[in-house]
Length: 223
Length: 248
Image (cartoon, rainbow over the protein chains, first blue to last red):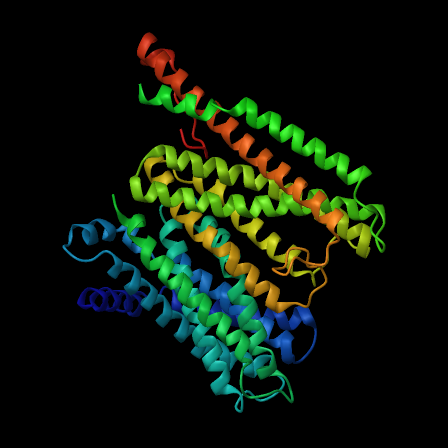
């Protein structure tokens, strides 16, 4: 547990000092909202369409973070240092997933208000707790699968291409569940509670892939 | 020699298996055209069902099979498990493309569109195929053979587990359009159709197994020849391996 905390602290400190990943993700998300605005050619959107735009934007912005996640480890020899240390290897997975989760939460703190301001027709206030719950579950899925995919992709040539190529199909069911769960929340006269069915699917998806990644991550490090 | 024993194992029974495959597919085709009744709604077009559904089913089972074999590699670290998993996924991909094309033709003929989005089985199949289509590029992008095998095995296990999960999620997202033929209650297929379908399924499954074994035997023989050439003629007689997505 101390190992995990150390790696997370290192990652966050690195991000605070360089401001490399999270600001890029945020700017990317806002730029995408602007592009959607012109692409749709309408002043505002709501309901399922809004949910789709929000989910897709967050997914693509998250992919930027996924691509960067292990780059420092690979290029600066962080993997070697970690493998030499007498610590549990799975700690690396937990720590990286936690860092990515933090990045995604910061991204959403920037992107969701921007989305509400720029595109969304109904006020987001009433359904905000539900939306936070949906996005939290979606973030876990993205963090878990993103970490696994990033660890695979970072060792390949053309890693920036392989990452999204592997990650997007794996995330389609999570994306689908997120968009469907958020749809009613963003409708003009929608409900304020997300549909339980989709929340359950997201939670199940998180759980299964967290266990799988936890079990398999060791093989991606051993050398 | 261990390797020679191995290749004879893959080659053994191949002839009988191939005969059984030809016989069962021939029988299935005969039943499809002369025994199974015409579908009341769709007429003759419905007969593609006897090839499309087995292809898709066998392909999905092949993906999961490849994942299970990949567990073997991760547990033992022996290269032959990686080769088995690779060939299983490779064959399943070919069957899957076949299933997708036949499904598309069926959709055009019976619903009027080449692609139908509100058809959960079709959509989830496409997603699975998209995922496994990245298997070869992933392998090709990793140069070190040992790492290639390890990473590809991790991918195969994750993707194999993804197959059923994906089907659950997509199926829940849409309403049913497809006739449910393989439900636990036996479906709504009349007996003669079910018999024809079962034999077609067995035939395609046998075809998959035959091709898998054949490919394994061929790859093993090629590796063995390489090793023998190197042993007899020296390292210079063997051209260096090109970078490849296949285990070597």
